[in-house]
Length: 148
Image 1 (cartoon, rainbow, N blue to C red):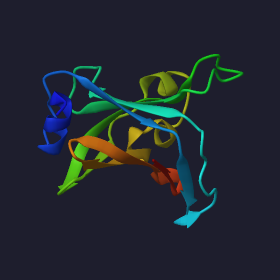
Image 2: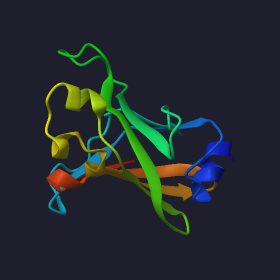
Image 3: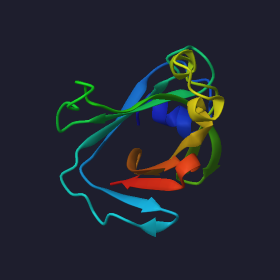
Image 4: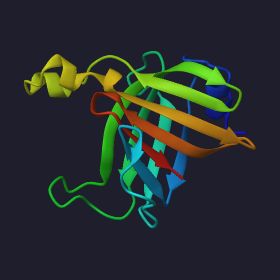
């Protein structure tokens, strides 16, 4: 089992190092708990979960679009890095929630609520020592996306 995954399953918000990836080729979008998209087969995304890149508590979670570059941003970042920490574990389900603020967004004049990482969270389903599903929650918009 990947070392970082052991720390996550143990609820350790201060892992020594490491990162893990989860690749998805399908996702389903929910808004207000209603399926609004059906399956999106062939939409390739990569989650990267790593020790907090700012050396603080918790983890950094990023999502990348593996299908190519965004036409405006000219990169494949689907979700910019968010600081998160473990807030709950129930057997093989681990929930992380964002904390703190995006300093870059604040510097550009974004209001505190819009720059809050607390608007984001992920739920990991782990089976046979690997992540098999991730749910991204965007609490401020009441949106969940389940990545398979």
